Length: 358
Image (cartoon, rainbow, N blue to C red; front, side, top):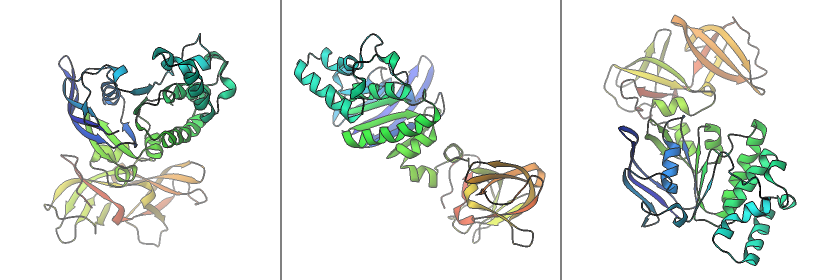
């Protein structure tokens, strides 16, 4: 079922926390609301759920306006960060709670619980209580309680944030499989860009109550709409370098210690202040006798496993980060050259933050 947000605004007293949001979440897709703490993503999710009233605008499920519907009448299921399991109930009773409230016949309820438990591989846990479960098992129970109702829309509010790093990786795959198996529309809130990139069909990047960009993971990573998206998406982060854009026929970025032509840049007004964005993966270290776009001194080297991050300091204490293979021989205080893949560079207007599309 499509979810349509039409001119959504939300204020708490005099403070406006969501500003004119217009989005369509396509049916059966996994949509992530991504952004830093305080950007309004959880408030937006709660409005979709009916837990927060809309100040102005409309929310539609399909063609039905749901602004005035109570949460129980929206046929949604919500999975919380805290799992929200009933500690006094067994897993079986937790899974079936929503069906019992709806007065579902016992035989039908038992069959639904057994089916969902089998899908999530928790059948052997049905007679345990939450205190006897690991974090990952409790998360599966919380998912199962949502699944058993067969809702049109799943809403998930940072459900993996309480898990350790290794279990989060496992549960990302579990959640993605869960979504594909059920075929419902899923709206997921997180501040973790890795979760968003690996799980989502589409991502709404939010900041300051505004949707900065809405697109596929490939689009928000490869074609960031503005400086905020460019700096927020990507690990390690994009290098952002202030300078001046010169020339019309052959646009050139110039700043102290770095001058580089930008062959893919569209037409633009001459001589404007810009920010050049280049990802660490799109830079190369080169030797003393090879052509380089800048030269500097290695400030720090970080080993990440199969890669190293090399931070190079050049003119006026500017720094760029270069990602290289782990076997690359480079040490702190080495003098190195850095070459940019200019066709992969991004340019942003320094005043508006908007991209100058390449």
